[in-house]
Length: 367
Ligand SMILES: Cc1ncc(COP(=O)(O)O)c(C=O)c1O
Image (tube, rainbow, N blue to C red):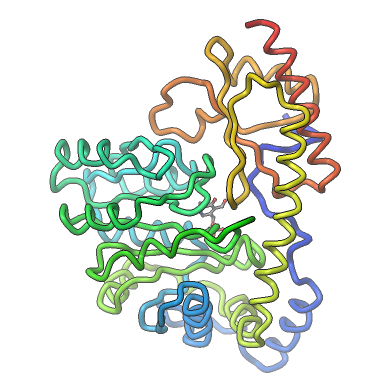
């Protein structure tokens, strides 16, 4: 059912897209004769890799070079490539439980066994990860994590060095999804998880979807040059050289820093409005916390009330939310839900939260 107030979908707001500049740059790319032919290089065209390298050098504080990168069709494509490269049918891939549910769908295509690891306020629960290492041994090849502004919980991992050490010690690949790394709303997150490792056990993927435009399908894999040469063999499509040139030209023009600031400030305002609305309208018994960045508020219902029960009240109020159970490999219960504050306009966001709060009050009367 489509609702008027969509707090369910995790899409960015179209208003972040630098439309005028993209129109100018696209025309320039076409007129220059670039970007109409097949992409060619499965590593991604060099001009784009050079610019992603500049971007990562700026935002990671370490020098990144084009031979450490594959330019991919978004972060999801990057995750698929890494998974296929490091696993074989029947291997175990660990994901945070809950996690970004599309990733689980992508990983399933590799015919691996997907196991959830518990999360704490610090990120992955290391004791639980150790339990899985002991249980699955060498079958455990990959751990996928979203260390900054996790989707859906909003948690930011502070145990990064310990995580990287576990990957080294037990010889699995730790896959960092850095999609929200630049979208912090107060203080910056800790450095990229990849910087906690020099041994090649941490591989990082990222995306321009939230900073520029999802339909560019521009993301990357950042790994050691030898790993990149291997990962490249698991790629079957070089992607669009047209959008690659657009992104490359945009970064090269120097506008990316202003764009990142714009996106950050834009979502900071929405975040503030969403938090204020939650403070004002949400029932006191609802357990939720304000994320330090990203797009999502994660809430926990009291015992005796499930997201499925809340659903019919929310439908009545014409507002939607993401049931937390959709984000789990093994749902512990049906007590959670996710709200995305990125997509709706600020006024609609406030109204949506007010309506959801009405639904919560009504559902809570059943308690
Ligand atoms: C954690 C995370 N990774 C990846 C993506 C998708 O990235 P892309 O559009 O680059 O495939 C999303 C989008 O919602 C996300 O939340």
